[in-house]
Image (cartoon, rainbow, N blue to C red; front, side, top):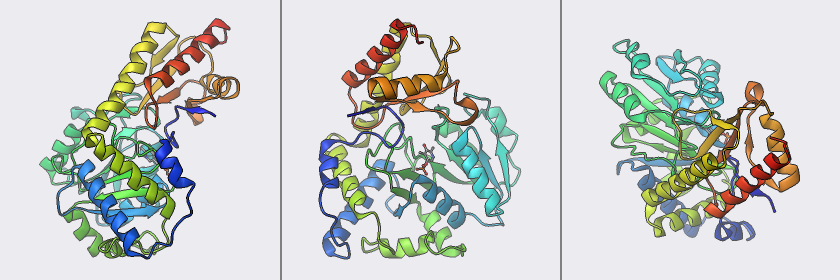
Length: 361
Ligand SMILES: *Cc1c(COP(=O)(O)O)cnc(C)c1O
């Protein structure tokens, strides 16, 4: 069995995997509706959304919900600021381009978050929307959401946050931050199989959804909202994964709720980073604003990051997370999400030290 330190899909708890082995039930039933209403209530609670917020469960990976958010919440009349600090930020930019929504791109320096000075440039400029991936997972940078939230509040801007890899990992309070929509997905810290993404909508966002007329059927959130009133979805959802999410949400709640889960994942991230420094392995951090979900590293001795990924996979049965494109040989990432323990990180560090002893890194 592989030990998985990627950033999704990640390791699931045995209790969640057991549900995956069961027959998938028929879903137009009061039992499934009840489960979905509980899913909605727990997601709202963990996102710290206001009472009037609503939740849509989309069958599709995180990008499906990014696309749904863009087309249901913005129109050609909007002017959107979007942070492009890596491949996920770039995905939002591409969506805005495809749907011809006027936008301006903010590019943080590589490995850094967005700064107050960068945002100040856009004060009073009439922007109406803001799109950000709270944790830009591709480089492992956590943006300063307080800073962004203040900017949006000051300018009356509608703030939409992709928290796909930060939900359950880093502190987040949708209501206090005036976030109008937040997105997450099943295969990150929810630690379930991929296939479901989730959009939490504030009351104001729900109003926007009912006003807009996006040219789409599957991703029209009006249908999702209408059906969700009775715990249903417009089309056949990934029923099995929604049942696994239910189990996982109940377990997080039983273990102390979202704050306890954030503390647990933060503890694993600190454990790995501290132990790694102690080993003196030739890796430097890439990010100057580390999220709890992932540590991005660059080899300082010219060894290919992708070679390290391949060796760990093929010779040690361990997955770390490679980077693509330009960063393929310079950056790899170690995830801290999923059913992992400190002992698992010891195994990874031992494997890396073994590669060092073999003079391969
Ligand atoms: C994983 C992730 C996504 C979603 O990617 P999918 O492959 O479509 O699930 C989007 N944004 C961020 C920040 C992510 O980490």
